Each structure stands twice: as C-alpha cells, then as structure tokens.
Length: 193
Image (cartoon, rainbow, N blue to C red):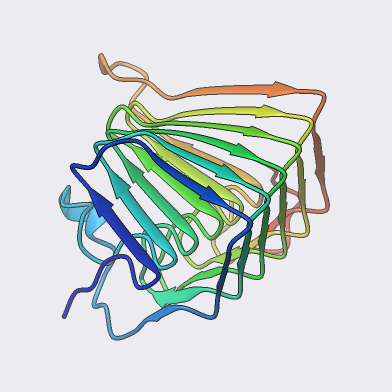
C-alpha cells in the first residue's frame, strides 16, 4: 500500500505559511519500495509534510521523529514547489529500509531555501540521510548545520545526496553558504555527499 503526507498533505494550493508548529512521530508504514525508483514520487512521500505545486514558508518549526518504511522524504517531500524554511529543526527523522531523504527530499523543479536550520540525527536506508535531491531539485542552505545524519548505504550521502544524470538536461543545484557539515556517515564512512 501507499500513503502520502501523514502529517500534512498540500497539493495544488495557494501559498501556505507554517509557523511555530511541530510535526512529531508521524509514520507511514508498510510501503513496499520508494516510488522514486519508478518515477512516481507522490506515493509514500512526505511523512510529516507532502507539498506539491504551491509555495510554502516554514518558520520556527520542528520536524521530529517522523518515519516511514521505504519513504521518500521522512520529514518533508517537495514536488514542483518552492519552500522557504527558517529557524527550523529536522531531527531524528527516518526514511527506513530503502527510503531516501531522512530530513528532506526535493525533486521535479523544487527549491528548498533554508536559513538558520538544523538537520541532525536523521537516517536513510537508501540515500541522503539529511537531504536528498533528484533531477532538478535545488537546495540553498545559509547558516545551516547538518550533523550526525546516517545513511545505511555506502557512498550515498550521510549529509546530502544528489541523484542526477550529469549528461541529462535536468540537473541538481546545491548552494552552501556559511554552513556546517559534521559527523555525517554513509555506511560508517565519513561521506558527507
């Protein structure tokens, strides 16, 4: 079975603003595989928040201990959207089994701009324990810290994983400004990306 957005499901909406809110302990269970592999990202995505088509501003929030077996984005999954995130904590979230994006997942022309935000103690079985970006996903991190995130697969990004075909027209962009990546592991190796 498939499920999406156990905490909050936003699609085809107007601009949304989420302030001083907590998303704690949301779960998606029994997913057979992360649908990113099949190119159908909407299923089994965004355990805490699933956002598609419509800008979102997130400030002073906590995404804590959200989990999904084979999930795509245990805390946050973005599809064709723009998210501005400030002073927020993504901690202890887990994309279990072959899941990707323990903290956040961005794909299909999505942009996540984070400022003064912490991604810590997140986990992914497949790739990108802190963050996962695919195809044309964009991450811009300013004054952020990614620490103690763990991926179970070697070489698949303890902190951030970018999955794009260099020869393809679509590409992933990552911009880090005054940010810290510390003690992130991929299958025991200090593989930040």
